[in-house]
Length: 277
Ligand code: URA
Image (cartoon, rainbow, N blue to C red; front, side, top):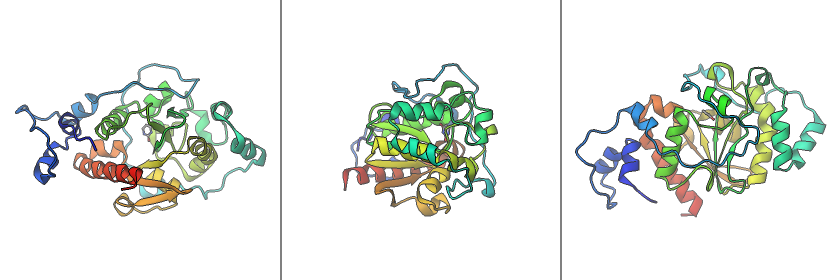
């Protein structure tokens, strides 16, 4: 794995690597002070993006970072009651990318459709080997139509870069729900359930070699586990025979900077799992 001093400093992980003496040959950082947390997120390299949502508009909105949610609202189970429309499920199960994007763009299965500006379908190469799954769009994603473009997205891009990955190249990014939950709250179980067939079909079409679940909502959606992140990270889970690594949501990391080291360790585990080491 590439260990680049600048990226590690950007992620504020440099001191951890210095202290832990991992034996990697990296030059020490210059004597300037490390960037402040907010700068670290905003100064992250933002690589070129491949937008897979044909309906995406572009405009700028205020940064949004999800706020902590009460435990009862944090679940994204798919066993919640949902209106079952067998014809819709059948159509989704056979959909190609164009049809799936159309179905998503016109979806009114749950009430999130009422306040959305746009459906945030997903972004990246349709044959990406890496799939990162977040929770749901925030205000900026709702404006732009692309996942993870706000502050959390900038941190995610920095993390990807540090791991030698790039959005739009070998990485596809999607969310548990494709429409913004009001106030950036955690999606309700019935909302996650309504979106589940769309995400499932996306995963079938992408056929990623590995999935990284960003936060509890994503890992709950993929594995059914509602355990705390501390209990589910550090080992590979599976979703339909695809290895799944759980890590902290970038928005959580923005509020809990010391946890970035754990996220970095999770990415290293994902890299090892990806290469079968
Ligand atoms: N948080 C998410 O989980 N997904 C996004 O797309 C943006 C923020």
